[in-house]
Image (cartoon, rainbow over all chains, first blue to last red; front, side):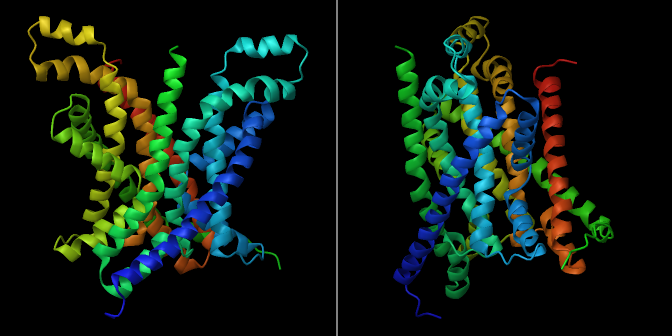
Length: 218
Length: 221
């Protein structure tokens, strides 16, 4: 039991942190793509896609991430698919991320003055062209700060994947704590690992926000 | 092979569902009241730059907001006993929720306090109100009112987050779900129903908190 040195703990936790990072990136990239699709539905002309997108967002924002993962994990085996913890976690976090990003981005699109829509409509641009050439480029500028800020929530959310058995930073920590009987040290390191991943993102989001407000006041 | 859903199998354990729901609500209520109170203290220290507490709260806020709730919970429940701080699963869960919500509400309420127009404070001073009276009657109510929607959202997020407290064997709603599905082997149905309960709780808590905001802070009937 005593042959696990502090160095071994750190090295193993580092390996776990790599999987935390991999899951975060996967969820963020695919969640971003899905979120963009949901954003288009959320601000569509027709009521039906708007309603569906709103329902999707409310369900994912109104239920625990852990339950979403359980349902995907056990629902998959229901329809005969053997879903690994990695796949279940990637799907769950992607859906979770897409719902939040769609809602964040909707706020950014709605912050664009109505005149921009009207002006581009008067230039005979189609709705897609309006979005592509007029609205989204402007919305993107104000969307960057809250999007970077939300990425912190994604990284933290990946910790829940440890509960369905995906071996990332938190799960590695639990196993090491049991093996070494040094929970204070191990979970201290785990917390430090998340802090090292999240703090730069938080700080960067704050800088972006400050720059944006500075730019606006000119 | 086709699967036959059996939702009634979940409702054979209605007592466990109700008990779990009650405990999740109790955990959320205690956490919300104490967490927001902690947030008010932190926000005042930060906004009025009360040294050394402003620095302490700044570090606390960054530490909590940049680590997952699950890790905070594990650190409190598994880590602290190693340095002699023993607590049972409920004490650990309540402490973790308060510490977590306290950090977020410090930041949220600070924004509200810093948005107080200077003229309001000067007016209060010219009426010979002392610092505490100014804070209690002039600064805090409008500050809370301004950020109340954000606080409501945060409380809902914390309530949903308490589902991971099942991992330290605190017998809340998710723990009840795990228990039920281990009895009836109907994992999908059980988690589906429990997810629906969480969804209703989220809607209910938001409604209740908006009512509280209207009645208690804005003093509107």
